[in-house]
Image 1: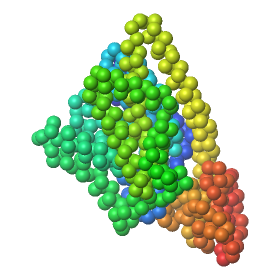
Image 2: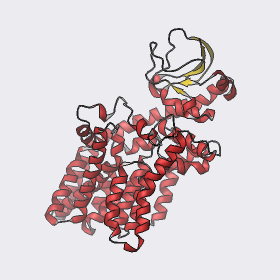
Image 3: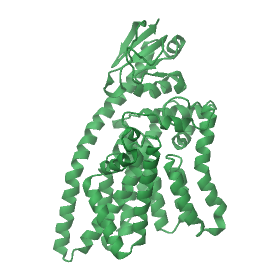
Image 4: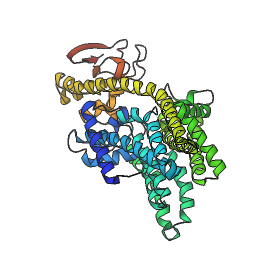
Length: 458
């Protein structure tokens, strides 16, 4: 295969990622929280007691741009969208390298397409979640290891450990093996293993006053939490099957069978890494952590790499050239047939994301219509549909703990307290509407787009 310069590929992915922001500039709940924390970090006023669980890397990446109004969200979203595109390239490169020259072309395309139609990579990229960057770090580490650069590979795993704590154990295991190959640089190896959990806890302590705030938030029982299942560990395993299309699982299994017969150590170790990663997530779910499916985006990406290898080896094993074309076509049709369902779902999600972006923009107008930031804050802690809490905190330049998110709000238990300016949007993309409980009086202040604004008091 003829490979373009890696820097050109990265630049093209970032440019395309930036272009997609113009189509749907939608940030999700977590991403807006990272923007708030990035701004607070630059102001030395970090407060992580509200919002989602803390993670360092998105905040550290966004902090240098947070002081320029509106730039950090755009750059972060462009980076994540570009990372998702680059992840497809890396999946193909890893599969081609593992499959060998005779099967490289087929392995590249099947791995890349398998990752494209995985359930969570496009969706997390659409809303600015950190998973695409995680996949880039993990696949980049795999490719560097295959090229004989263990220290560089460990550096990328350390960066991945600033996104997901599951990587800490995997990085430790790799570091022990890596230390034997770079004996003269063992202090650096140790530092790369220690730094991610240390930075994670230091920033969480600075922002919350405790070391367990992030862990406590991550153990919150959401409706889709795997910890709510009868056997959380088994639920996590089943979610891995849901995160990729069926042909990916079958082709990955074919790769394992070929690797076992050929005694291919690299592919077998990769499969072991995949199983170990899923096992860590499963154990954490058993201990009460959410075990969300997007936590498995890394193992899903590794499954796609294995699937690419399996496809390449299957096609290469066909003796006749005409039969190879037929086998390639059959596998491609099978992959495309299953992938179309995911692509259709992603297309529908794109329209929702555009609506979400429009609604977020209208929220700025709703704030102005209510008298502006000072008028809103003067009443008390503002309240809003739960999915928009972090976005409102960003727009009002408030800590997340100073904006009331009305999770599970009902008239019996409103889950917010007046006096407050209350922002109410349709529940489709903003989450359940704030409920006005007994004894709470309200006066409508204004309407703007999809938003209605009330002043609530007793």
